[in-house]
Length: 157
Image (cartoon, rainbow, N blue to C red; front, side):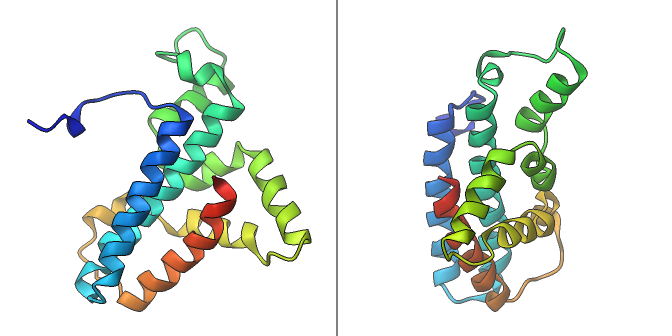
């Protein structure tokens, strides 16, 4: 049995490495040019953002790496733990990362346009439920999604 299915806790560095692999996977699906692969490309693209945001959570809240459960923690710490280990709500995770917002806004002031808006749009658009969707995205939608992701991704590393 492949060991890829083993449940494990990842460090922020490992999450960043996984995000790079899943981005490459999404790009391969996009490169087929087939609309039938668009949903997969977009789903994996959103997962890239999830991994990168969770890496930032681990960096910003170091205790998350060692906390095996949220028991005994304050309500706000329990919420952070759940966002890191149980949630896929990208916009909620982003709300707990003001340092990411400051970084993107600083880059915008240096001429990199609309990074924060792009990230917020990706976070608001993507949902884990895409994996169950019977609807089909167009390959051009996937191309646009991944292009926006590629621009934001380099600032989330």
